[in-house]
Image (cartoon, rainbow, N blue to C red; front, side, top):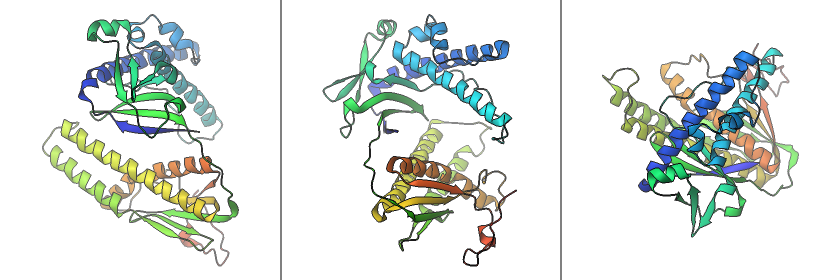
Length: 347
């Protein structure tokens, strides 16, 4: 299992390099998508892992990126088409509700994620050297640039590095293999989780230890964000966007990610402390679609990232050997466990 540590890139000196790399990566992604779509429409062929890089090796966008970074970029496109094929097969078998769509083109002039494998990187005096190709060197008069390496990680454990453009900012992700000791857990000890809004997670176990994770903090952050967005967009045309909107949106997204990670860690630490071997999470698929609990409550419920929290808890369960069980809770309020009532499910 792999994890990643994400950090904001604050050095303004690196912005020209980052913009250039991500814009070029975006163009290369679109080239790969175009070629893969043509193969699919004309030949019915789903691109293989190495097909795109072999075909586009002489393309200008490929040659303006470091070769290993360009390869990783095109392999991500190939993985997207492979996923489409697998999802299509599940849809045909009736295992999926929604029909999958072919990967679509990215926005023209936008920026894409660029990935460097460990082999392309070098650590020098606490900084990681990012190589550039000769054609870029001719334009920028440099053959590389440097990014700070986090002091809490070991460089030898890094598998790859990703540069992510998002809302006017650039982030660097350090991907490494997660290692955790497998504690002795009892499968008979169970933690049941029910999610909501004010009480984000209500956690009750059969070992006499229960707790609630407050959701009012997230609700207040979302309310303040919505007020700011409404004020700035007032009187503006549809689709209006600005640097200020990007800034407050990115700030809100960071707050949500932080809350998700901290809440998931609280749940897992509770299980490890009490030897709980199973988590039962009440969840209804597509529960946010067409929900009608009032306009204000709709906004509160839909904007709370509970699905991401569930996914994060699932990841940590796999890491520590806790069994994760997702169960439908459509009608739990209409049945009594103590009376042995039958629990119906949503049709």
